[in-house]
Amino acid sequence: LGKPCGHRPHPFHNLAPLMANPSSLPLVATGLGHIIMGGLVAVMFRQRWWTGDIMVQCGTDGRPKVDDHCACGGTLPYICWLSEGINGMAYAPKEGQEPKIVHQSYIWVALATFPALSGTWLVLRRQHKLDVCMGLLSWTYLLVGLFPDTMWFLEHNAVGVLHFVCAFAGLGLAFILQFFVKPKLTLSLYIAFFLAVNVAMICDGAEPSIIFDASFVALTLEWTFVVGAAAVGVTYCVIEHFSRFMVQRKDPSALDSLRNPAAPVCCVSGCAGF
Image (cartoon, rainbow, N blue to C red; front, side, top):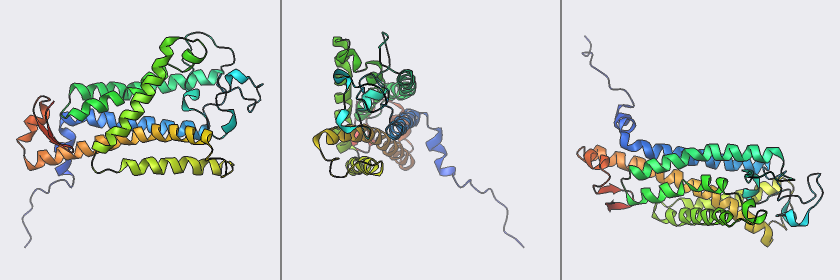
């Protein structure tokens, strides 16, 4: 009278190996870390985290102007250097630094610890040579927070140079890494982020004629490259995650190779051993 009752597979049963495969967890964690930091950067921009910083005493926030401590006077209140919102890791008290900058810096460092640790995990469990690059990139957020630019500008401490070295190295690595990620979507995202920052400033009241001045463009590019780096991290982790899953589905014996970091692994960028 009726068809025999049989066991119906769960609609997501094909995803079970993807979720259960321990070798994919470092990629998942690293991608999540970049999502967190990319979201935090967006919040920083919209809430103008730089307001109240010791290096932003430009007379626009109720405090008197201090010429030597006005890092972005011509672009306020619309945009400033990202670093000025997180340089409160004070290793010595600084006059003119509002407490909120210190609190923001601790929030940044606390959240940035997650991608740093997950990136280290990715390197230790690497399955592709680009995993190492992604792991190093994931440390950038934490290092720029631990070595604020005030160490160089105010304390004249040579250690402060690490802030700029880590920032340039991380942003440059992300921009280069995107050309090894397929499909190549992130370059378009860089352009979209650049336009989005400009549109946001216009919506906040900036004159369209001034946002393309050199001072505005330099700051816009910094924010663009930071969010772009996060987008590269997320894109790489997502694409690699599902690419390795598909390889495993087509060839179940590939699971042993995926779990062995020393074995050659076929990934998005081709077959390579590390």
